[in-house]
Length: 140
Image (tube, rainbow, N blue to C red; front, side):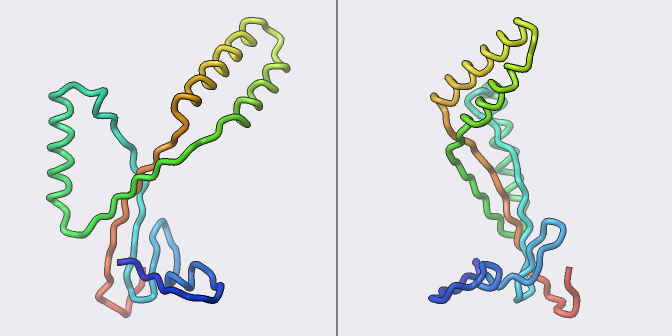
């Protein structure tokens, strides 16, 4: 489905993927095909009641069945390092004068450190919608 071509020479990604242009979140390829990528959010089903889980699953199934175009769903999970963020907060703590604010900052950074040690991952959900323009005289 992707328009990738293998090449031994070092050329730009744009030329290798045969990209024509980007506009308003749409990607145009040279063969008049387009993609729109949308970032979505996820739902933790384990935190929902059984009835809520059933409703969510049924709704998602109905959504997928209603589509007349192919859909690509990408779920990317990657590790996130928050150490620099926590260092910045500790630096800002030195500028605070009130003890209770410093204590709250300490509590927050300790909690954040503990949480980041248990779970160091960030999840990103993306959907890609393809479109083929049959009218070659017009572009998006």
